[in-house]
Image (cartoon, rainbow, N blue to C red):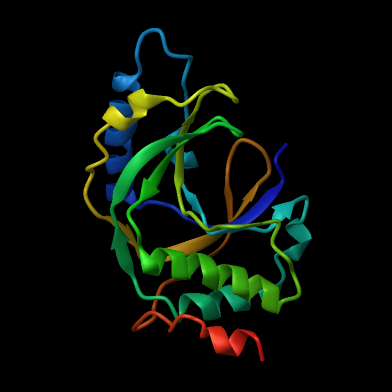
Length: 195
């Protein structure tokens, strides 16, 4: 059992339809001699904003939920588009990477900062938001056929995020927050970091 706890963005109905198109393209592009591809279900598609950890369900306290609400109030709704698919050798994941999207990265940073303000160190910080579409065996060489998959599925709407708990095989929503910010928060100033 996973027992994972993390804030995440999940696609709405239009986004799920777009990812279904991309998943189909991925499956059709797989060469017949390529390793087997384990495709993720539509209810599993998400972008982890930061990873709190395993076996830490007790950390979903009212203070953490309030901190996420405050983070959502600072980030505006936005869209992003996908750049490409890549294979991550260590995990075996086939992931969809977005084009550079400052608002999406700001949402990752805001959720990380929210839990840190509650005294929690995330197990993993998200520096490259992504959506995992499938898995190949771990440790393979580069998979150049992934470069042939057309990732043009249009803009994907980001207007909320959720705190998800994975008891094993599914996701339970612990909390959900709409994005209501008017503008992106300013980036941290380098000089302020060293005072």
